[in-house]
Length: 452
Image 1 (tube, rainbow, N blue to C red):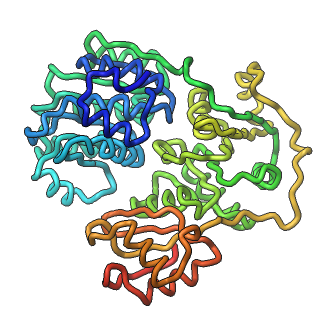
Image 2 (image 1 turned 90 degrees about the vertical axis):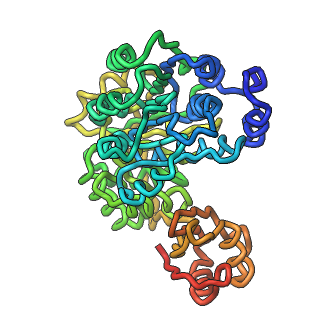
Image 3 (image 1 turned 135 degrees about the vertical axis):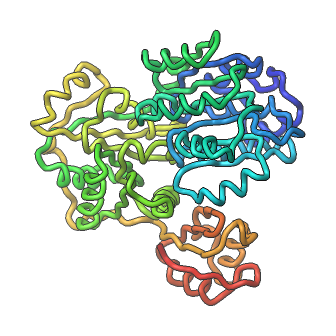
């Protein structure tokens, strides 16, 4: 089904097509007509199914751009997901000039956000805690709100955001459109829907979506670190997320892997925002092959091509298991999901044993290759200058391929933030690139440069 079948402006259609959206995904085809009619919608869709566009196109279509007031609020469980959603909305918002989309999340300067809010915005994307803080301090005003979106609502409930969400609801008009997007559709979600939505259209597309091609393998072991290294040695994945259930375990496991010559970083709730950025950028740009993560920290990670997911700790329930493994095998690629369990955890394996998709293999078949190590393809350079310094990706690329003499193929992903830029450089050329940029200039200005 094409987007042209929807009652959208020609500018919106052109923008959507320029972004490579030709056919609607299942969630878009079923949810968008209701969203555009102004109906409340409760939708179940997997991560990566196109749900951001499913609500984003609708809320942007309804905007009165001349009215500089907050007309849409999107609440997300984590900073990473909020960032991902804001980026996607900005891409779609190109159909019309002057649409202002603002992010309000924890870990960022409150004062800086106050300054941004003084100039108003059409759309706010944020986390419940920070949005509520602005509402209580009266720096954010929602009396003109038309559309409220709860994205990954199930996760927000899991993370204990229900009280904050209920408090936010006291600030929004009773007459509004409320869109609920969730990967699961349990009783708790339906109960929330009843409380905050009116005559909601129910959309459930998970059964129609093409299942990810994922090999699901289970190994019983009493030495999980050793088995994990053997798994890497046998399967040779390009990039892996390893899930643990606690922050401490994530930190300890990453340290153990590094001692065993496997380049790994941990992401968990105790990291400062700049540390999280550093970790996420390195994993996304192939400067680190292994990310050890807790469920909360990994929420909203947008890694399009992920070779493998490992459940180092058994997930709390089948829903979490589905969430975790759904990150691999996307867009037609084949993925591998491996779960480790020990004697103590064996009793918790029963729900998985009844599913024929789950293979239970003997750990003895795994052999460790002599001298095996996992090193990244790229290394990240950090430039102490970003968007606020009027630096664009093209300026960095020009400095590296021009004065520094690197070939374009040796330069990977470039990530621009307000005051910093991250550039992935092929391992063999990192010293050369670092030296040239350190001694050279970008846009005729000198910037501090270091290797992450």
